[in-house]
Length: 405
Image (tube, rainbow, N blue to C red; front, side, top):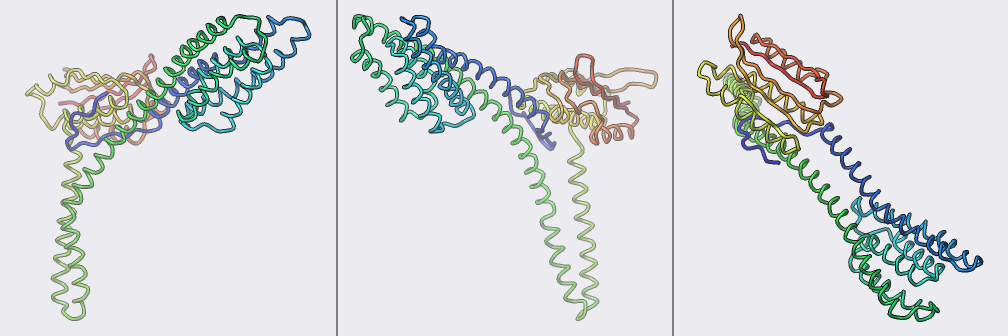
């Protein structure tokens, strides 16, 4: 993505709901993929007590793993809710979710009464839960989870040598770090995606704001003095109406002259604003569209501008086509690629300048002629040209303008 290279005296289309809608759908899909990825870890967390059921000894001992399963399932749900809040931007988790998950984690480990499964349970929770809380809270919780399995080793009768527990404890730590790296990468990519979308929208808004400020500054510079003089002379004329009618009449004539002068300045400013330069308009539209994430390809412009037989004033209506087409792509389409083709054709009536703007993602309102396209069609008709706008078979949109030379 790049900033517009040059804006000159042209306006910039503003971002709108069509572009935001595409971003929203993309982010919702990405969020769904992330939640499904984290959901696999939650399913592993919920399913650990099943191993206790499979490897249970006497039948009367199976109630503990079954009870542990009853606490591990809501534990997995709480972990998913914690990660949902983290993805939605909450850096400080809801205390009820965080401490509730830890309470269920402790209850599940007590019910399992298996040191190996307890280590796997703690490792699975930590690989996700450590990212849900600030570091000042995560460090003591991590230390507690590292030490807790050894309480079961010292208190319970496992029947296994201490070295076996140590090796499994180290393995559980490695497993937790491996799963945590996946969780961290997932959250990191999500944060980058959010920042990228926000950056695109911010740059598009900045382009619009810069153009508005430029036009406001031009109007202030042009009319500031004239309107101030009008206000002063009108006030003076009002005071002189009764005392010096002739002087008041003179002041009113000057007010009239200043008003006509100010009106002429406004018309000059607006005329200059409307007389677009084709090369600058193409550069502006390309910059804004690429800022919003649409790749732009331009062909034939250099040959057109280099053709000495094409008068400079003939390109102004085509510049309006480029502006309106770029605005429609930005507002109504979901395009990832836009192509602008310029060409000169010969017919029975002489030469004609043709511009075609096509994109690969026509939006819901892209096929209807709104005020912009209707006004553009009238502008071209006034100089003998024509405009067509239609969807393509490939699901895109084509805007074609023909201007006789």
